Image 1 (cartoon, rainbow, N blue to C red):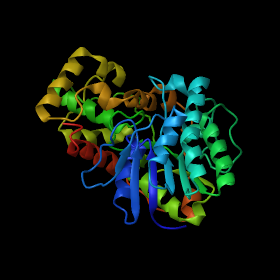
Image 2 (image 1 turned 90 degrees about the vertical axis):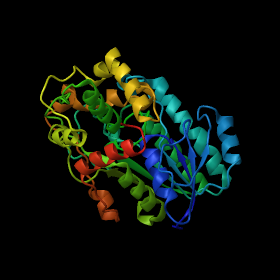
Image 3 (image 1 turned 45 degrees about the vertical axis):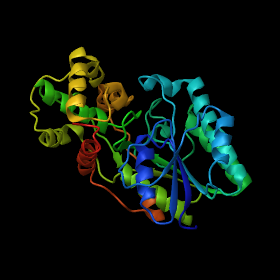
Length: 364
């Protein structure tokens, strides 16, 4: 496959999209266009163009694509989620909306004749763990799990348009993603960092807010971006579905003292009932307003910073997932055998992105 081109990153202000914008903006030969409702928060040395289009509106998508230079590559990381997240994962109307959003953007791109490759993001919910127990480790090449999921709407439409227009595609299934995006649906770094900063401000202990048996696999968004770039240029990735993780495991309770050290906090004490309950406290919200003003933060209110990510962390640290006899773990052998063997240290990733959110004036 040809190296370089014009890449459109849909969902560019999210945790996956902002990482991709930074990565491709620094690669030689790539022109980057970010498509999102909000401007991505990235380093100042990352050149990119920004386009605003309502993915629910097919005509707006056609107009946006027509206004751009020919797009050769797309990363699709946009998603519509319900408040609180979990209720929307079984909502047929929300699934249909996500399916329509993807089709509205892909169709004019496919018709342009310039498109060469699409990277589509799914996730571990493809294996149906929200409905039933899953074989561990979960592997990409088994039969499709027969449950309602907008992933299948995306994938079926992608395969149809690719066969008609002749472009390549790669589908990724990452586990828990870590990055610097504010206002994201699922970025654990934002609520964990905000919780730490607020505990320091309020003189409260940075007590671990969940089940200590919780076990995660995580993906550094820098690693995901590297995988996008590899897939865009590797024939071995064409038409394939790949799980992706950092390559190790992440035990939040074990990482907690290291995070506490980063913020100069003590961990012994009574935790809140949940992070959602903590952030809902009027005292906590007032403390954030003081912090934002004192430190000149970009984000003035907690909802703007957190998005739905505090609900996501509550789910990941909750008893329902931690009590599973065998946690959902993904096999990443396939992508390694295909030629992508990069990895990250997951504790290092968490600490790195906490520091990045502070450098970007998103955390104090």
